Image (cartoon, rainbow, N blue to C red; front, side):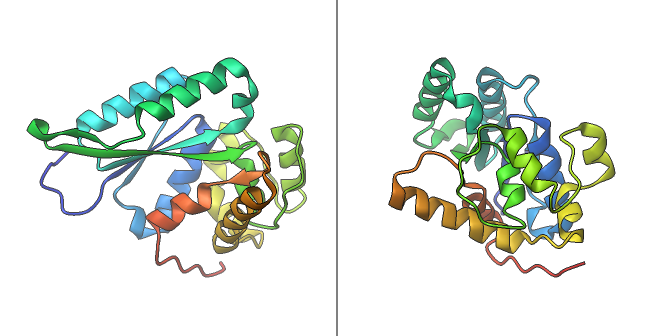
Length: 209
């Protein structure tokens, strides 16, 4: 990576292919994301995510955003690993001799990123027992399959807006979910995706197709 860059370069690491395809669809829709690179670990594990974080830091990224599905963090072992990973990156990584100064942030969604997709269409904080339950609600608004071939045929963001969904509304709904989570002491059905996207596209304006 060019250390003389003047704009902020962002690496986004998702735990799965859905996050990568979604960020690619956003990057194609919003020129503000031209310096964003979506990345996918070799395997859906926190160990592989950290390997990508380390690689991104050495490449000279200014910030690395990690997208976390919290449904797998219900397992005590995974929860402990995740807490440890967050703790290791609770401060920016600075290596002056290499010109590295990188901020690593984690953005959680419970249960999974499909909740943020549902927020394109409606707001909810009801408890979902599985990601499949969220998908069932989602397909009431737009066809959706958690499959690579589907994502290749249907760029995710553009697909949802075609069916009347709105990224602006999704961001607002996600923000509202965090407010209600804090107010109610709730640990389920929330998304920090809106907070991340407000950092990446602070001047977001969206027109219907």
